[in-house]
Length: 132
Ligand code: ZN
Image (spheres, rainbow, N blue to C red):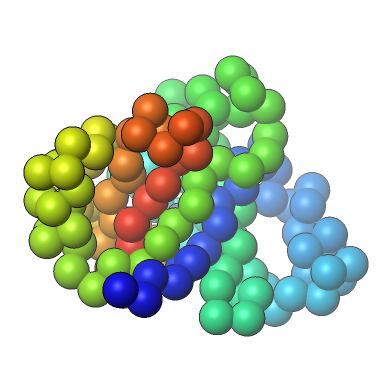
């Protein structure tokens, strides 16, 4: 299986505060903003080779990202790996005893289907699977 890193998600209080760092200082191509209501976030994407960096800014205090920042501070939030068949991957992972946060795919940014695996199964790293 050739599973690539689709993107790395980073939780920030304000995208505008760090935009210059990723775009100007690091020279990554800014690909725009998107609101993902389902997760209560505004996201900004930067192209990094075949992968992307996804900045996640909470839209409200109820957003899971706001809760993450309150608990752990700003920083790396999740690692997203590509999936060519998300439903199949989820059913296989469940059979293998991996704990899932999402048992079924849900909507992500850029018209993707996404699902999160539980960090208990990965020693603390929140893993997202992304189907383009
Ligand atoms: Zn993501």
